[in-house]
Image 1: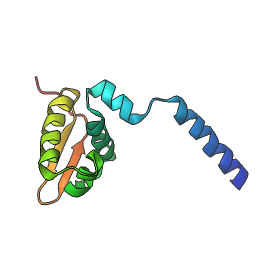
Image 2: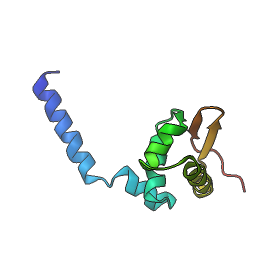
Image 3: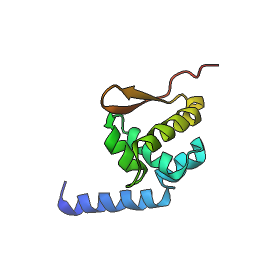
Length: 104
């Protein structure tokens, strides 16, 4: 693929993305998350495990450890009906599990 074709492909994708609501806004609306919770959800949604420090930074620059614990607890309650789970990675951080069957 030539450079010009690559640039046109990227421009088309940017135009497509600009027409969509942001992922943060979608998570806020669909899952009932706050803006900071939606940022953390977007981070965890990548499927990787993230350290507590990285998760804290996703919430806000000046968050303290207890804030993360509280937000994770609140998020778990909000996303559980949709089949998502936030799992603890002992001694490291958190990872999001993708939709499971929802327990009744």
